[in-house]
Image (tube, rainbow, N blue to C red):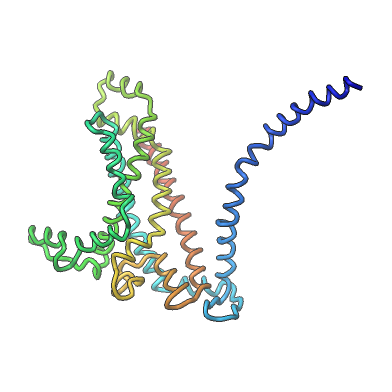
Length: 317
């Protein structure tokens, strides 16, 4: 009897250890998935359900209309104008931003005096208030007394009405985005660069490779996963751009993004329809889902392009 009791006591730690090894990891990650289901999946599903209704926020009845909101959206000229603006600002901001971040990270990865201070300094734009950034850049891109129009005048070029000119508005908003997020991406690239083995650079130097050759033949290929990550994150943020163009066009009805919607993004158009002045929540939800599909398509295209470019570069080397 005593031997049987002792055997059960010995088996208890074994079963507990087996349970801990098999099921404990799922319990550790379960809180994340529970929170994601509550604050991620449920709003996503609810938005899809609302997009199938004529959902006026000021009305009590919300009749089911099926795909009518999506059909109307495909023929909405203002929606496609916001898509073009979003993609234009995205290209002008994301491409220079990642290239500058890569170049800046390469500089910070070298032996410099006060290197820690410089690395901390590149984050200052990111922690600056977006409203303050918009006020400063709004003055820099002012039509009459702005610094950039003054510089254009020095070289004999006419000034630009940055808020009323479509390309000018894209450049102004993209400059704000680049100034704010370049340092953030540079630190991500810097962290990945420091994980590259130094032996690769030493071997390349012995073979006569110069720093520029080492950068393109060693650093960039080794950073491909990090470049893909930063590209996807920048794509998500760039296509959801809202605050910068809204504050840049501060004044009368800034949600339109200028007098003729020169810089109105998809998120701004979604807000305009879902809330004031239209209060058409169903139509705004349909815009949100179209934006979701746009982000997925652009992100997949960017990742495929980066991978194909990386393979071509490695084959060329």
